[in-house]
Structures are given as C-alpha cells and as structure tokens.
Image 1 (cartoon, rainbow, N blue to C red):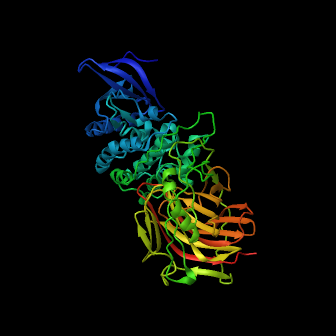
Image 2 (image 1 turned 45 degrees about the horizontal axis):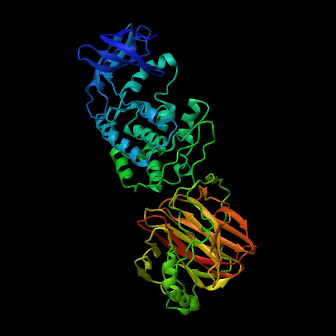
Image 3 (image 1 turned 90 degrees about the vertical axis):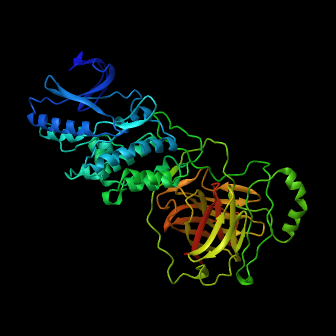
Length: 565
C-alpha cells in the first residue's frame, strides 16, 4: 500500500520497486520541488545493526558531489524503515531506454563518457558502487546521465544475517570477485559492471542468460564473454577489444579507471551503418550479418585493370591487379581500346570479392560455427612446393605504390595496403599447381574494416577460388568465374571463434585437392566444400578494404605444400 506521506514529503506515486527498496515520486513542500524517495525494505527493530550502518552510509552518500551523481538531499526513518530522499530524474532510467532494444554506438559511448568521471571521483575516495546497472543510471530532463544508489549495495551487507545470502549486488552485472564473495573490492568491480552495461546497450541483452540469477552469476565467474560481433557484426572490432578488457575475469587485466575505458571507446571510428533492431522478444535472436560475398548484380559495369607490374625475378614474378570499384558505361566506351590492349598482354578485368552494397539488404542469420579439434601444422616430411618468408629474398613480390594503395617489403613482412573503399588487390605466384595446400601468417596493421586471405587455382582468365576472413572474425569460401562471384558456403558470412578479430594475427591455410576445398584458421578447420570448376592454377594473396580510411595487412611465411593424402 502506498503511503500518503514519508516524513514531510507528500507521496504522489510509486515509480519503482526492487528487492531491497521501493521508490516513490514525492513533493517537498519546504523547497517546493519534486523528489524521489527510496524506502528501504529493512525493519530496523528486527535488524538494529542496520541503523548505525545506514546513518554512516547515508552521511557518506550525501557528501558525494558530482554532476553525474544523483544527489541525496535527506534521509530518515518511516515506521522503523529507513529512507533516502534524492533528486527526481524525470528522464527515467537506462533500463527503460534499453528495454530489449539496441542502441547506436555513438549514443552508448556518450552515456559511458558522462558517468565515467563520476565513477573515478568516488573510486578515488575509496567508495565502490557494487550494484551498477541500467536501473541505477538515470536521466534528467535534458538527457544527461547520472548514477544513483551509491552505497545502497554496501548497506545491504548488514542484512546478510537475515537473508542468508552473501552475494551483494545484481547477479547479471556482478564481477567475478563479487560472485566469489570477496570482501576487498575496488573500483574495478564497477568497471566490470560498466562493461556489462555497454554490452547490453549495444545488443539489447546481457552477455549471459540463464534460468536463475545464481546461474547467471556463475557464468560471469566461469564462462568467457561471448563475442559481441556475433550479435552486432557491423560494429567496429575495437568495441570487442574494449569489452574484452573491461570484462576480464582477472581484475588486474581490466581498465584501471573508467576514464581509461572511455579513452579506448573514443579511439573507435563510429560507423554510419543503419541500425537494425533485434526481433521480437518471443523470437530467437538473429543478428544481422556483414554483407555477403555473392554474385554481382546483373549488368553491373566492370572495371578496367591497370598495366601489370612484374617482379624483377622472372622465376617468381607476380602480377598486381587494380581495384574492383565500378566505373560508368561512358568510361568503358572511352577505355575500350586500353582494355583490349591489357587483355592482349595477359590481363583481363580485375578480380576479387565484390564491393559491399551501400544500401542495407535483408540477410539471413549470421551463423557461428562450433570449434572442432585443431589440425596439426605441416611437418618436415611434407613436400614443399614453394616457400617464402618475405624477409630473405625481397624480389619475388611486386613493390608498387600509387593512389590506390601499395605493395611493399617492410621489416616485419610483406605489406599490402588498399586505400580505396570497396577495392581489392591480389597477387599470385608465377608457378601454378593442381593439388596443393597454401599457408600464410597474416595480421591487419590498421584498425579498420576489411578482409584478407588466400587464393588458389587462379587462371589466365582470372578465375580462381578465394578463402577470406574479415576483421570481425567471419569468413567465406568462394569462387570468381566468368566475371561472377559466388559464395560456396551459402548466402552469408560464417563466424568462428578460431579467427582472431581485429589486429591480431591469424595463421591461414587453404587446401585445394581434387574437388575438395578446405579453409583453416589457426589450425582449426573452418569449412569444407566441393567444387569442380577449376583444377589448376596459381596461388596467392588477397586484401580488400571496407573502410574509407583503407585497410592494410602484413604477411609472413607463405608456404605451398603437397596436400596430405
């Protein structure tokens, strides 16, 4: 039953209820303003220890001053129940803003930016929130965020003897050390909760779900944080790097402060991809996939290739092919003679996966493939057909730079940089193979979006198979034939935890044996497919940019062996 008054405050309505307290909207006749009153569900007669704790904590909370902390105006008792009087935040809570929806990245970062300095300020005073969650992040009339309920979770320690529970906080947002019941907590527990909140803002759900709160808490203790890119693959991969650090099981591996976490978020390039909301609550979540490698649109114009760049060594020469960005029909008419001349010299139109559509396209589900047992790397007994570490002989691969990008030897390996959005470069060996396994170590240099990988059985007509991975941890096996692109795994990219996202290195392997094509990442088989289109040709490397700032990859240890029988 809603009381008419609490202290001098006139109750207008109930605006929230939780396990430990009920919140009321009230009117303060002395200052003629609306306030929020939190009536704590503790009977002071039954728990006399709480009274002293409450007064001490209430004084401490009232002394905390920061623009991003909801101020406490007053405290007292109502019929043996303690209460706190706080500023009324008319904009509601973050939990109301989320409500199963996903939030644009820039808006989520803005909220984290607003509350991070407040967390740092109280942590510097030795105060830990202990129960940071969307329901405790409130907004004023202007949309500014502030944190409420500092000290409430700490107060609940005095009720442990009544409840029989030693877990202080909300299980969905509790750090591993809170789940373990450690008594000595510091601000890094709040950093962990802040990471969970960021995950929820961006996906509409927490990283872990289970049938009971205790099961959720145990998952925070024992299970790895799922990749956010499987739910929002269009997000920059740096988001996952920030979350991995904020949600580290070992608090020594987390950000030392909330401001340090904000610094990591500010380094992220915000994408302009339209936001796609998740399905209804009764449907199985199906996050949007990245744009698939699929057949080019019928009648799409084809780009002309630039003149070939040959390496100095005839025994190991490679060919550079220009970007695949489209050109107009008028440009094709003007360049027709040039195109014929290039074909006469041995090059046709450039190859590579097609550009990503600029308009949003409805796609099938983004599929995560379970991790199988790792495959052993090639042994010394494997028949080596070709090998290059890109460090000893620096004449086998082209060294070229123009406005579209560059191929270059550097101290750490062979670099391919694609400067133009939706463009791809590839190089191939002069030597051709029928059945072979291709290996390479590859690592993105730039924190931008793109894909990279291996090609095999490239013909003089520039038909070939491609095996590519993307910065967000997804992959495709496909073929380019007669000017058409085809994804051999279906209509969408697939995702695997075997692929290290972002700027982490990956060991790639492509087997082209008979009509069987296999793709491996870090010795894990990603996929196997059969196709009889090509039986012989060159192997090589491919890099494409999906970012206006370009995309660069460094390669090491290119190896071709006879495939295992």
